[in-house]
Length: 423
Image (cartoon, rainbow, N blue to C red; front, side, top):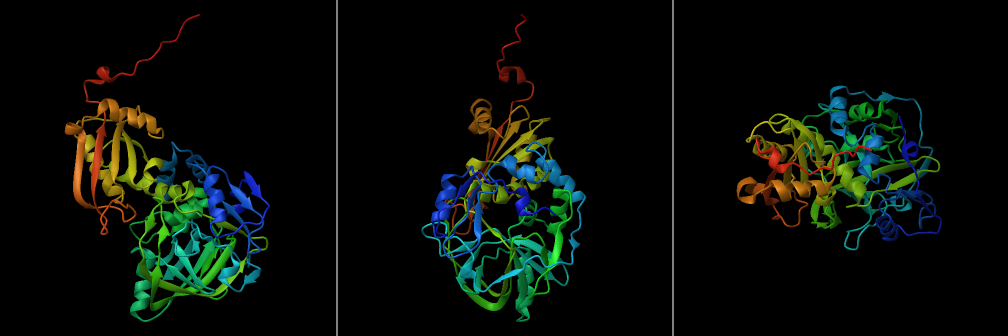
């Protein structure tokens, strides 16, 4: 399986010593379109790399596709998963005694502390098998971490164990190829194997090696592995934390991980994923786009879907369709919201609009949309808890915009063109 090193292309190298407390995140945000390697980090012997995914095209290249073909590549990969393979090797030859020895960043002023943001958490359930998922994790002390558990699959695994007053063994793999990060961010409705999706996307199986203190296997190409267990009945305050919108998420009581072992590769690189950065938004938003496409395809001839960078790759969606009836845009709006329930605003456009170009989408709104006729408003519905304008319960108002041309009047909306000049 491909490693982080196989994908890493450094644009800027920093040789001066830098601090993991605010300084690295500041440099990364200033150079958000460049992959930066920090060779000397205060308090750690590990190097740090950040802004590893600097654009949608860079993400697509990691998944062996293009922005135009991305949704279909994921759709086909879901139909043809490639199972992970075990290997008999121990790639993590060096051990670290404390979490404090890792260059874990504190990113923004009001963050509760240093957060692990690029770690994939692995766990097993007797009924459902393996799960791989990404969670923000706050360092509490040398060997304890607070983990933010949203009510998805890992939360279900943990709840089953906690009901028996048992700990859930986990392993956190840090420093993985983007195909594994993408698959671990994908929201399956059922308990599917994320690593089989990662293998299909990358075109080769993920290879797995045994952990040392827990009965789990994690990708052998990981740079760093933190092993431990989520303790039953124990909660601590987690947050504030700067999330995808660049605003602070609230403080909650969350479960606690007790760390049992930390192992690293020789010359390991710690990947710094800055919250609300381009990288964060793409890794969180792009896995939702195939779900939107799937739902809209049930009611319309959908051409492509994108969650826009201006909407934090989370709250705003653009959908292009080949319009066949006047009812389709409204049906597509409702389907799009079903495909991504955190989305707040969605714009439906004709297939002559390039949805990867926000100016073209804005043009469609300006010339093809009338609010009294084409705005579809949904009041008092569940949205995203990450939207600071929503109520604490994430209740919000959603708007769908039909920015398509009326059928039979296409000539009135024709874009002016200059013909070829014969010489």
